[in-house]
Amino acid sequence: MTELERMQQTVTYCERYFEFEDAVTVNKENIEYLKTYIHDNSYVVENFNMGYKVRRSLLISGGAGLIMGVLLLGLCGFSLWYIPAIAFVIITAAMAAFLISLNKFKLTEAEKNQVEVNEGIKEQIDALKSREELLIKQKDEYYKGLQEKQLCAIPLEYMANAAQIKGYLESGEAETIEDAVGIYEQQLLMQEMSSLITQKAPEPTAADNKARFGDPLEIIKQNKKAKRKSLFGR
Image (cartoon, rainbow, N blue to C red; front, side, top):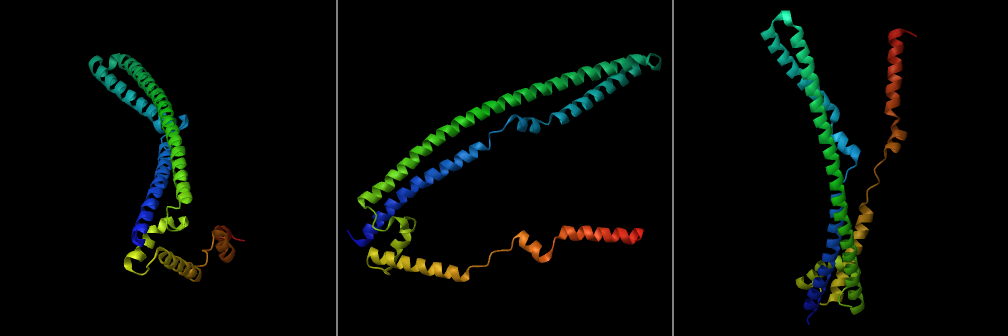
């Protein structure tokens, strides 16, 4: 087996390992995503906005009662004004009671539905957590197998850069895997040194700026006091 073939085999082993790692990451992200669907009762009540629905129900009921009262007033005349007035009160009250009761029923159903959703989501999360344990176990066992059987031709800490190391063999920069690893380590060292040289100073925090330039809110207060003194005298 040539050096390039050995390195290709190593890349394949590394890619397989990172498939396990990616599966664990995706599983964790899925759990966090599912958690966004879990809400308590106060969330349901807030989003249902019962206060707005009650006001709208009263407005609709009052409008319906007013229309019926005007129609009856046209039929009965002003001499029998009390009939449209009574009809207005009865229709408004009855319709408001019905609409408010309907909204309360809808809220209760929404709360029950959220409880069912929470239970269903928790079941899915539990299943994903069990799967995550299995994936982590498989990943760890695979890594252990790579260590014990020495299947990788490069140090395992360089697994994420296996394709880059392989590139040195393909380009002819290195003749052996050991040479390719040496080139990679040299470039890694140069990058670390370069980052130390070009490392920027940390950005000043809000506390640092306040110490340097003063508190702008305090300056505003002082300016307000000065304006009041100039308006009302000393």
